[in-house]
Image 1 (cartoon, one colour):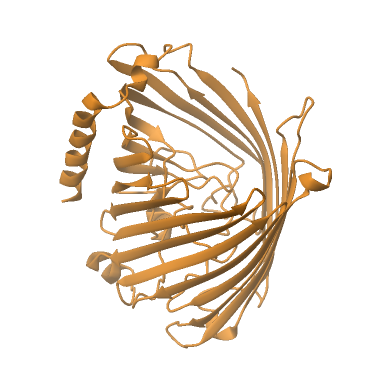
Image 2: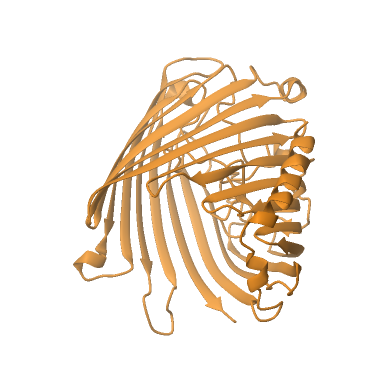
Length: 428
């Protein structure tokens, strides 16, 4: 059924282009609009687990190259996107690698992590007016299918995606992907995805208000819907209040429930965040709530191969209270107090700081009810503003997570440290 809806919306996109502005007519050409970029990334994550669990740490150096061509001139433009990825392990050998939440380098059968990773991908793209059809290896960033780029190397997917911006303020997306490349392993289908269909869009209703609706169908795993509403209320030039609502409804397939020993098949999770910005300061209050009968809570990300997980992208969680913990357990309720500071106002442009305290309760597991967890999150980020190292960024992030004994089946206590150094280079 979703395949038919995707086909219908694709035809609707193409038929609507006759009456809309035609960006393809402004194409300068395949080579003239091309770009080649390289991101050098040095990344380290250390997790000091509590309650007798082994500590985990991984450290690596990566080079992420991306090429994006322009479109050939004419009624229908043709172009190519491509990427090449390489990562070298600097630490995280036997005994320290293997944490699913780090996953820089996949472990071999002997328990040792891969020494390096090398892979590449490419996609061909076609543009008619403001509608682009892309087929091949891609890194989709949608609320129901969002590749993870928060580790050493990014995930990628193989399939077809249509993106249409024929009407001002409106973006429509429809796609089908049949393979997932794990961020820590070589191979186009190392994630084991069967298929995922995605459909939806976002619309800027007014200058202050925008919304989005999306749906996905992961073959033999689940069906998911997403809704977003975002409203910005400006008070004056330097002050504003932003209200952001995000929600998911997930329905697990019966076969997935049976084969994986899952209890229940339904989850609803939503978050509402209010952020008051004044000058260089921002203050956030957020509430998040998970309901339904599935003991998985809100299920997302991971890999169908080896992990028996969902496979819809490690960043497919557009929720306010997602840091180290996602606060997404069965029946969990969580509250956040957050603060942000831009040091540019104090003579240090490029330096920012973010803090959050999140507390969750009412967690249900197979053996208990009323469990709790809490996290203290801190992050400093600095981006070089000028000189030979312009745009180089250094991010230092830490989390202190404490989980009650009642919740130990769902999560584990620990201290996490992340250090990321990214240096983007524009070749052309």
